[in-house]
Image (cartoon, rainbow over all chains, first blue to last red; front, side):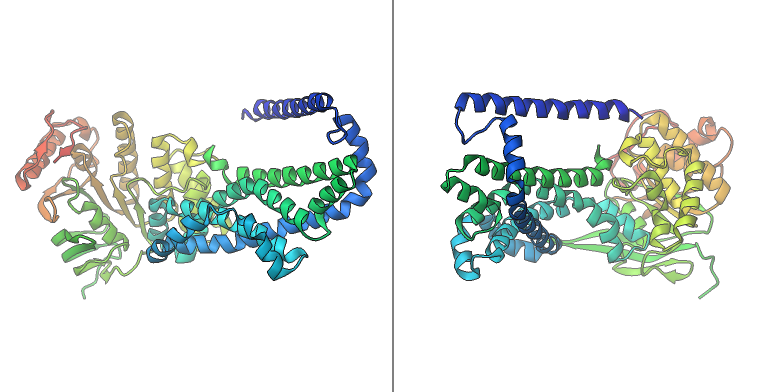
Length: 250
Length: 273
């Protein structure tokens, strides 16, 4: 009913944010006055100029992140459910999780490079691992707060175990999956950058560092913008899905 | 086994013991009673006396440790199709709309989507929630949520309605209007009804028979007939006050509990341990 005003307010908010960021960027660029940080106006030209070379690198990176997000989530969600449902398993593995979760997975990169080579596999493995832990912890916590009375309702209605999952557990925990993915995108992209910068000759991470070593700052900056764009787009997608799934909370 | 109505409820020497980490707890002890088809029975007693446990057994959510719980002459092994159970906090699904909540019992029974929809809409109209189909439970008031839980039971066309302190979270004035709704529905449909309550007034207003429970381990210590239920203006009548007093005395006799002071007909009177 009061959707139009709130919609307009949101759009105004985004417009303000974009103006704010661009202004901040512009002022910083003018102050720094270095070819490594071009002004927004210069960037448009640089991006257009580098787009043809940039695009294949972009897709390689996008492919790696998306596949990793899918693999990490697909492994984490069922395991989180099993943990949360079984007291014994949870008691057994909670300390393991507690110790492994805070370890920055990115330090495992050299090992993965030795084991899996220089192509997609070590990057996907590393990002998947990062995503896996983030989703696992979030979903495990969310299964624990599934309302008991809702489960009771389903049972009293003669619902099967499957109905419990379909009508209670899944809808109650899905928001946590997308919240953790949304928050995890930033880390995933950071890990991707490091992995691509360190090894191999593909992806935006490589593109950026190669441009840097060639002292081609405009090209380098185009790569940075592309990587940032990848992060923003993924973040926005997860944000939209999360909002859809949690409309009932607002 | 003798012929029984399909929605008779019979408890035969039922015991239920919970086995916890620190020993076992006898929740109900030697519980025997009968609820005839189409009867409305209120259960009242101190907190933790096994009233809810009793309701859970009828719903097929708990099995007795000893004795038998029969519905329609058959032991309750699992939740029964025609039984609707409204748990204490209503068991609504926050992520489902009002319409989806009302239709849930039918959805689970694999009733076709269009029929489930039609019946849910009818039920929502009946409880005064027409026009709220697309809202979420969070957007409803406490009384409206209560009505929604009721609509779910109605949509299922339940012949047994079990309610566990359904109105405990509702303020006193609204409570009376919801009690009227419950009473009207029962008078119209004549389903078998079991209502667990803390409120003497509610038990007397809605229970054609009132079963008074002892403290844990719970068992029935008094059965009070209350034939005037449904009489016009019952709540304000002298008979109502007298019946409340009778229940109050039965409660006080049964166990060392205190009963809040108040007028005989005091709606808000609650049992306190």
